[in-house]
Image (cartoon, rainbow, N blue to C red; front, side):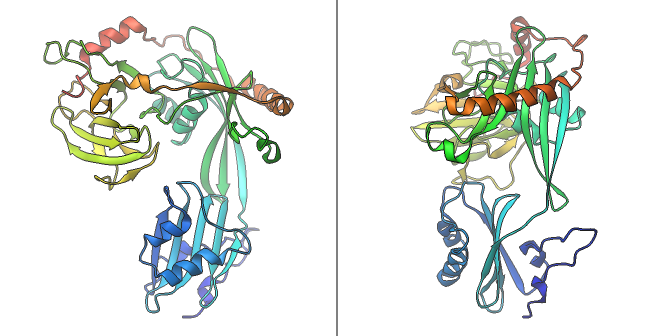
Length: 421
C-alpha cells in the first residue's frame, strides 16, 4: 500500500483542507472503526473493538510525546483506519472537540500530531418571542437546533424559568464556530429572559483562568452566572425535555381525564409537540425500550441509588436503543409522541425509588456557588461587554400573545393523558 493517500491537499483559495481519517472510508482496502469513550479510559474503549492488543498499544503510545491520551470525557471519540489485508492500523484520530483533534498515521510507525485547524468564530445576536414552544421560537429566529440545549444549560436553575410559556421573550448572544469552513458547534455567551410579567433575568458565560481555577476546586472551570456572579447547581438529574412546560404534576389523587375515575398520576407531563427530542435525565442503563400498553412506547432507565426513570408515549425511539445499553445524561432516548392511552402529544416522565413512584420534582438537589473575589473584576468586565451587546438587540413585543396562568394549566390538564396506568 502506498502512502500517497496521506498527502495533504494543495492549498486552494488560501486554505489547506486538513486531511482526515474519514477520507479513507471509501477505500476498499481499509476498515474504519469508530467509538466513544463513555465511562471508559481510551485504552479500555479500544479494548472493546476488534483491534489486536498489539495494535491497541501502538495507538495508545503513538501520542506519548505530545499528549498522553488516557482519560477524557464521555463524548470524546476516536476513529481508526485498519489495513484489511495486514490487520494493522495505518491511521487514527482522537477527537476531544471540533477544534482539539490528535491524529497519527504511518505504515510502520504511527507518527502523531495535533491537527492545525482553520477555526472561524461568528457572533450571533438574536431575539426570540415564544408563542408556542421554545423549539419553534428558535427555528423562527433562524438559530440552529443546538440552541435549544445551549439555552437550557444557560438558564438551568436560575430562578423559576424551567417553564417557558407563551409570551416569554429572550435575547441571546451566541457564537458559531466553523472549522475548516464547516459549521462545528454553537455556543451561548449570554441570555436575557423576559417574562410577560415579573422580573427579567440575565445570565453570562464565564470561563475561569486555568491557573486560578485550582485555588477553588469546588468551582467549575466554566459555566453560566447571573449578574451577581452566582451559579445554581443541581444533582445528577436534568429535565428530559429542555425548557418544556409542565402541564400535569405528580398527583396520587388525580381524576383521570380519559377514564373519569380517581387514579394516581405517577409522574409529571411535559407539553411538547410530536417529534421533540427526549433526553435521559441522568446516566444509567436501559432496562427496557418497547411498547408498554397504556404508556405507549416507553424507555425505562435504571440509575444509581436504586432510582429508575420512565419516558412514556414516545412517537419513536432513538436509533439503536436497547435493554442493557449504557446511557449518558442528556443522551437522546426518543421523541415526544402520543402512543398509548393519551389525548394529545406530550412526554410522561416517571421516577421510582426502590420500585415505588416518587414525585420527580423531589429530585431537585440544588445549591448556589458564588465566584471568588479573584474572579469578580474579570467577570464584571465580561458582563459589561455582554450587557452592551444584549441592549443592542431589539426586543420583540409580546402584545397579543396569550399567556397561560396556573388556572389555565389546570383546565388544560383535562385534556392531558393519564401517564402510567
